[in-house]
Image (cartoon, rainbow, N blue to C red):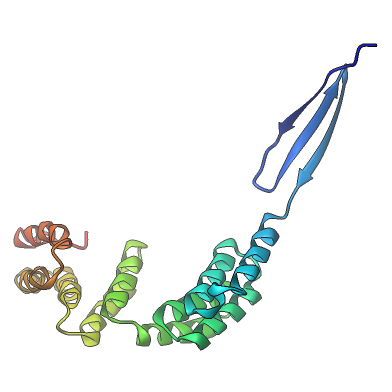
Length: 210
């Protein structure tokens, strides 16, 4: 007796599902298989938080950020972020909380959380946050925050970089050049090569924000 060969093929492959077709002789039977990937990942995260990850602010913050990035279980994300803040209130977890609240449509609460985050930010964190806003096209808000960087730490090299951006934006290139020269003087050696081209642009009266 000759056995008929059976073969299968996968079609319509997606991150969470695929259509499998069993074929033999002239017959073909398709059926779909799938898995709730987000639910699987969420269970894994919960298990991880029961171990070392659950004893740090960062573990809960990372878990909450995964939910936010996946637009999944935002209520759970908010609970995790609150736990992160209870463990250690920082710029990072308050900023994440503001984004979670915004995603939930709680704009007023989101604004308050962001104010707390900015209040807790150090000079570097605030500059990086403002620079991110500028790159995203929100220059108005970025230039509202840049002057606050120097209030966090007026002697930090990144405060001089922030002020150089403000002065460059105003067209005050001599002052911007002085600020950036001070930034380069205090910056780590590995950072200086990234700042020196900006100084040349200022000396040529070219706005470094463009």
